[in-house]
Image (cartoon, rainbow, N blue to C red; front, side):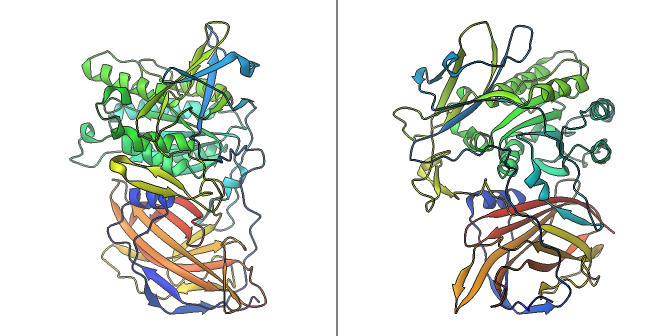
Length: 537
């Protein structure tokens, strides 16, 4: 039996915080809270098994950026005239330019790996979820976004047919994750897995989808979606490809050169650059006749792809074939890194151009960046990066937020039910949940492995402080659940490195929900997140 833990638990108010604000909170590590003291209740049950050690897979390269110079990293895909991937090019064949000024390539690497197998992680208990898949990721990640915002039911059925064909022919060792677009928000419906049955079941939950009455797709922008995907995926290491199935984008230019004030796109480009994301827009409407609206949509799809290093697919049937082509080449690219000469953080858009000696190659790569503090290496690990925003404002980013996410498990059971692990010892947050009409109360059990938090010594005992938050959204993308709690833990003298388990009560409206859970270490800023499709009965 583990020794009893003691210490106050504090509850913080999250009134008015949107899902996007919470995501930005994870990247900026800024939280507006008003802690209210509340007593803790300890309940004794057997201790759960300790989780395996944390950290990303050793197969995944992690680029550590040091010094005060701006770092620009771009992944370049090279194809010959027949559209085949070109391998074996030396560093000397590549030439890179920043606003037409030649630059020195400081780091060069060719990535030419076969896909790494990843299987669905076992779930020992119903309604138990984990982000443990973060420890088993392949070097290159493929993410599907199913965006039905502007698709008719007929077009959605065509997309469902083609996408199911794609999943059925997916190589057995190639994992993907599936997100759905709910309004302007991406929600995770299936973590990374190569289990076809799980992927098919996830896509069936998304397609077909009836939009809520009164929604005007014309007024739904794409910048927020891409920016949130950047923040969402920034905790994962390595290169990511987003396969974005949609009915055409908003038709608004995604090229900073087309704006008198290019900084209107600065936030989304900064997030996509930090997360090393290439976007592959795929027109789910298949072959269609051209008109002014569709032409503008296709132009935007090309701008998004060109400026992020992806490739657009439109005005063609065979969506499954298009997706397969992307995955066949996703593990083959060259990584170029340089530090711009005479760099000045003035927020201006810098155009990047790459040339390769030899044949007439076709190149895909990130075509530019904003000259701000993004990817500005800290002088020491004790100082955060500073991101320069518009109007002279700044935002601090933590040093290791992207390199070591918190791995945890969460179980959701009706309030009053026993813990998922028999005899589990946990901290119970002693607060009352206001029960509204058509709302049920649930307990969320968080289980964290030992040594997950940085501790401080107070009165000879180790103390940890962290926050947990849960947001919930319905199928229309409306935020309907919002709760956050601050937790302070004093570890026992005899075992200062035992697991940490917390129980949090929350009211969940009945029906299908998308839950977003987050944990944040107040001492280091290290964070972990988990998204859960959940049905409240």
